[in-house]
Length: 115
Length: 109
Image (tube, rainbow over all chains, first blue to last red; front, side, top):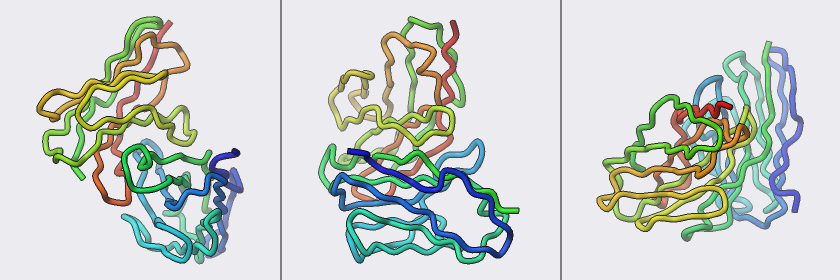
């Protein structure tokens, strides 16, 4: 298994541009997550999904959109990039609800710089 | 989910045990304690988790006090590659995992 993969690794955007951060997992996990991490800080949840066709907001959803058309993919969309969205973005997934299945597995991250 | 408190930084000599404390005094009965680490801006890596009993795996041991208000992550023989930020997280059935600032562990030769 490749686990959780993210593309691109690094991107520079101009203010007002849009882009999609890709996340794919090959572990058949139901739950998927998007986090952002600002320098020196912990991770903050942007959006999550409990299965294909179902998404919900996390702690900091403003300025982002997500979709979950398949179990494997969970893209994150930035419509109008702002400097405040400069951050490292991590995607994660986990199998289910009980015990060890709550363990989340993280991708390598996408570093985004908005100028 | 209960809030956790960790020291911002710790040092450890290479080859010695690293003991990382975490306070979670408001933990409730169905909440698990999870530990993750993040090495140099890579994605967080799962280490271990537990509910009541002490746990051990190939990476670390987790000691949870009897009242469950605190826990300690033990890396038995720290190496330079264990230098990272370690996060203690308490979670129940919510769908997110709240990461705080963690403890920056520096293993020194």
